[in-house]
Image (cartoon, rainbow, N blue to C red; front, side):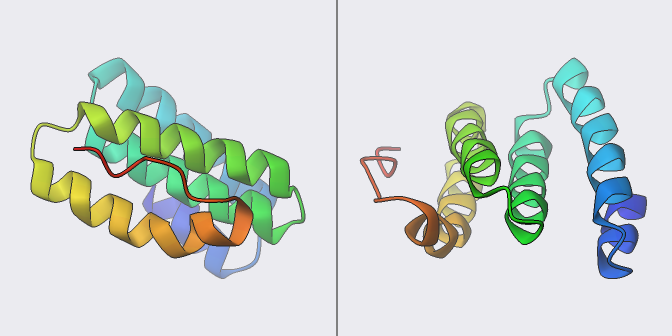
Length: 99
């Protein structure tokens, strides 16, 4: 993910997305839900930045959904709080806040 983040800052968004997808594959295999939700958020931002708003929205929703699997409910609340402004930009907020 570090490489993906650096590439995004260099505005090499296509390459950043590829590296983030690879990191997501590892996070899924490891069942690291916290990291998965963070990667989904990153992918959401990158896709929205390049103009694929629907795809960005779908990754944001996936991140919120997988955050339910995070054991530390304080982390869940932090992730959802960070996602809230982004979600409000792309869709109406629904009942995601039931922890």
